[in-house]
Image (cartoon, rainbow, N blue to C red):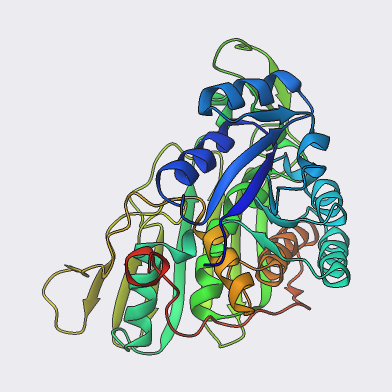
Amino acid sequence: MTKKYGVGIIGCGDISSNYIKHAKEVYYDYFEIIAVGDIVLEKAKNIAEKFEIEKYGLPEVVYEDPKVDIIINLTVPMAHEEVTIKALESGKHVYTEKPLATSREGMKRIIETAARLGKRVGCAPDSFMSAPAQTAKKALDEDWIGEPIGVNAICAMRGNEYWRPDADFFYHKGAGPMMDMAPYYMNVLISMLGGVDSVSTMSKITWPERTIKVQPRRGEKIQVEVPTYVSSALRFKNGVIATFVNSFDIWSTKQPFIEIYGEKGTLILPDPNHYKGDVLVRRFRDSEWRVLPQFVEYEKYGRGIGIVDMIRSIEAGVPHKASAEMAYHATDVIIAMDEAGESGNTVKLTSDANRLEGLWTTPETILWK
């Protein structure tokens, strides 16, 4: 490394604490959070005081700071396009929470602006670089289950109104279970299997009105604008067929988060929303499931791996992994699933993404050296 990067955050909601905590405790050799901003000044002030960050204020404080090299965009999804464009135009690289933007046009505008200005854009989720995901990728690369045939995946949740007083935006256009949770699954599957060719979907709004269950807004109503139970079939360009259920209407399930079926066996992955968990495999003639040893202990690592990889890639002059192009395809697939649910037709994708070859960098083996 030639330098430690200065990083600013715009959007001081709950997730900002997670990024700052990992920056201070794990990724401190690579970047430091030096400024935070929010359109609600009190939020920026509270986060700055909690984590002893000297500079805070409205977003302009972050845009205009010459010491900020990268801006982390943690605003609500509907603001991602505007904030990322403004950050790029202020001369910063950007790492944004998912989705990259809520429309194909917005995502194209971001990618074109970054290219014109010579800046990088990275996009969460980066959990496809976690230890379980890397272990599963290694198992696929080493032919443990043979040629992949199919995938079964489920994201089963009860709605955010049960634990968040600010749950409104989760049920508005640009969010919902698809934009909120599907990126974790799409990034893992795309990184292992490559691009999606086409999708078919059935979906519904189970309850058109939700009630917030926690203080200080307990009892307030939320009008639901997006489907909350979505069942999709996806055909990947390599021929793999996947089923994906994503819902805010399910109390619990015993189904694995992700199962990959191959010609020689089956691989089970843990929750892609997290950075830990067992990877299981069972092959022909195995009498039971076995837990694959993970070649890197990763439990303390979390959000921020993608930022470290982007910094290293900037320094090395190579593409970073949690890229805007990968995010474009993942979000394009999610938009296509919504379109297929509305129309009842199969939607063919016009974007593509390459399967990531080999294994990505890990703190113990490469990043900390």
